[in-house]
Image (cartoon, rainbow over all chains, first blue to last red):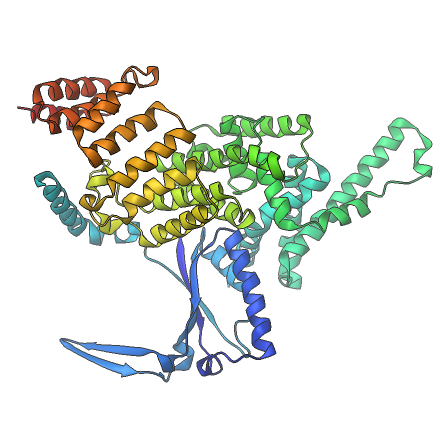
Length: 143
Length: 417
């Protein structure tokens, strides 16, 4: 199964990365962890995100689209980084997260969210997917 | 928190550590069975200790130490027995200290040990089937029951296959070390072959199959990614990884709602997994940067041509034809030649395909091979020779054992009027 793993932001991470010996050390530790993930065949993708001050939100309401500039207030709900992992189950994901070095200076959180898989969506997707598929097939035959 | 939760957490940690643990142990005890047993002992100890003392900061090292103590105990016990049997006063010199040897061996590079175990499980003295079963067992950590279900075999057969493989390894006195230089290059194909065999076993699974079967693809991809991490300089490792990632990207698109197989050119490309395609293309770029020109890198390059095309009409057939020219040089096979003929027909017209297919029509391997007349029928049809095309489609329909394919071929024959 695939899981998205979110490193939640802190007030500190929202200030951006500063080159301190502490940051360097954390980067080294995180690099080692990433290597371990890769060597175990677990890591599919991942990256760190810049502070929300550099982000934008687009608010939807019916036909309306309003752009809101960062920074955003609810710091603890913001994301500072993410991974996409392929694991056997949530237990394995938890075991991996537990061995992650502290991502932040102070207390912080990492959240694991399983992705919807095709099988979960099958009953929603099948009629439409079949329709698209049939259309593609029809086009191919005509071509 | 339920009572089983700490146990599940510990078992999850163990699963992550198991392969490295066994790899480290086998180097010392020189016996896959014993190494697995010691690793299992370490899990049992962890299950009783960790709920009390908490999960240690470095669980891998903790498990290794626990297993190591067991190994030392076992060696001491064995030595005691030996002494009694032999009645030799060799005990006086006490030259060999098993414990110290183990300490030293344990300090070796862990990655190298894992690689050593992979190369041992995939040693060419074992049959491909035995290699696959043993690799899934010791590296993938699958149970014999899971392996049996995955290979549509009985648990007894698989268990016996694994036991025999371990015995063969023991008798041959293999070193459990990762080979280097020319020997590594010579033995790498038997490792890659096994990973691809596991992948294809999963790829061949149908919608109704036990879920364990399709998960073999994931297992093989995991092994491929693992190997790429351990062997970052080997082009073919990345070639195989790229090939598997790109092929796996189509897993969801290749089976229709009715369970029928959908050929590549007719798949809904919106259902291709873009993440896996990107990973596959990255791995291929890596293989090409390492000047990979082996069978896996070339097959991955072929798969990439399809992955890059937004629609079948966008497919770069001249490039595919050129890749087949190179592939048949490193992997000569009548099937490759047949696919090459198809690529030529798409790139340069049906006459080009016919010319190539006539060169291989007599190959023994292609006798009674339905895709051969099917391809020739397609070329003839496109060349405006429907009567000849019809008899080729009919011949192909007679040869295939797949009912859906037969229906498809007969429909094409009917369309030749």
